Structures are given as structure tokens and as C-alpha cells.
Image (cartoon, rainbow, N blue to C red):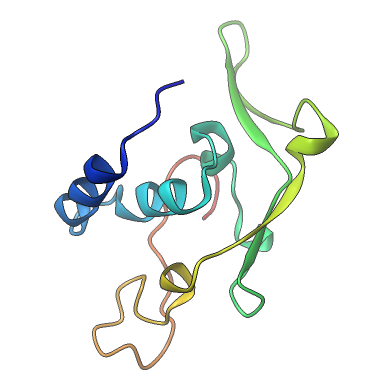
Length: 112
């Protein structure tokens, strides 16, 4: 696992702002979730009003079977994460005036 230094993370997000990877990159940097957890998120795992998300699944690739969702390996892997305010801000997913939450783009393999 490679950890991105804070200065690199601050430089990466503005560069990704107009790209489809922005949401997943911002969420990963804000929460510390691993790639396979991010790709397994579903909207039912996210509660914007409570500013939290629950990690229930991970995505894995098995050469013989392809991609599949699986439960985390340990009890600590299944957890609830508090989301920072900039992630739950109404304008985060694209509302220009910040007046209302708008659906975030579909990313990854899951339905988030």
C-alpha cells in the first residue's frame, strides 16, 4: 500500500475536479478507505443526512470467476465512517449554486 503525502493529495484533487474519478478520489482521501471498499459502495451504504457511510462489502477479482463482492475479512473491516463536511456539502456532486443535492455520477463497479 502506498500513502499519498498531503501536498500531493491537495494537488491531485483540483486536477481531477472535472473528471469522473473526482468523487472516488475525494472520498478515498477523506476517509482512508481502500480502493476495493470504495468500488463496492452502494447508495444504501451512504447516509448524507447523518454524514456517514457504512463499509459492508469489498470488491475482489478472482481470475477464475472475475469480479465479485465479498464481506470484509475481519469484524473491524465492517465499519461506519463519519464523512467530513466538504463531502456532504450540497454542492459536492455538482450543484453549481449549492442549493440542493444532486445525484452523484455513477462510478466504479457498484451503484454509487
